[in-house]
Amino acid sequence: MALDKTTLHGFLPAVVTPFTPAGEIMEDAFQEVVERQIGIGAKGICVAGDNGESWTLDVDERRRLTRLAVDKAAGRVPVIMGASAPGSAQTIKYAKAAQEAGAAGVLVMPQPYVLKASRAELTRRFAALAAAVDIPIVAYNSPRRSGIELTVDDIGALCDAAPIIGIKESHRDFFHHTHLLERYRDRIAIMTGPSHFIVPSIGLGARGFIATGPELLGPEAGRIVEISLQAPGAAQRALHYRLTVVYQLLMGTGTWPASLKAALTLLGWPAGVPRDPVMALEGEALDKVRRTLDELGLLPG
Image 1 (cartoon, one colour):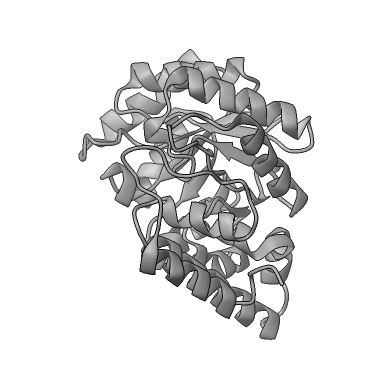
Image 2 (image 1 turned 45 degrees about the horizontal axis):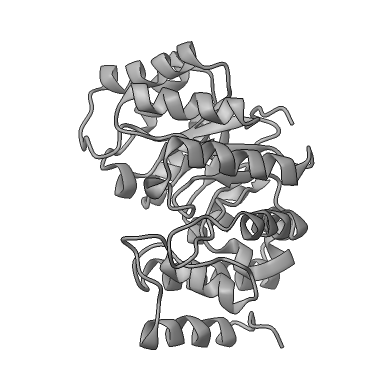
């Protein structure tokens, strides 16, 4: 499915990569996760993102997971692949693997682990990627993950340097989101990252979200954009509260993404366990996840 600023929208989950305790990818489980996401209303699938433990995946594994997702999606929704690496050469290698596997686009953040970059270094990175690979680019602004905080002006410069169709915006400052939406909502598809910003951001012009936790709400996840665009009322308040509590739970429990995998497993998804060096939740941390899901009415039965 072709990807552009109009087709990048709605609920687009960054899916988990199910691993066995030995660290092997569970391919059948992965495809079941993809199918379940589509079944509850996903408008796209992101492979090898943060939730997918991208830092543990080599280029062949990324290519294989993307192919599995593309095959399972079967044209129903687009698949994008995380292609971030510190250097441009490795980022381009990941992006080429995504293209070979049939991905509709790539998700790329500024140079992670470098922790600092000039405007020229930022634009050179994205321009080099655009010159090397003919595939739509979704930028990813996550200061917590990359160590680099893209300003609203930086994002404009990147859009001038490369054919960026959208951005996953995970900045934790809503001032930033407000100005980004006001300036660029008609130019690119702005996809919200933090779950507790989703409802207000959509009201201000965000096209959708690539976030952590909405899938725990089941079919309601596929209706988040619809609910967020309604006149303010009880449905919006309840949705916003549930997204906020889920996000706080997942971000504040265990080492990421152990809490998401634990929550999905409790809901009956074949999420597997995290890959080394992350350990699966147990004891009080696991009880906390179970208790919170129960309090929100999300556990089966």
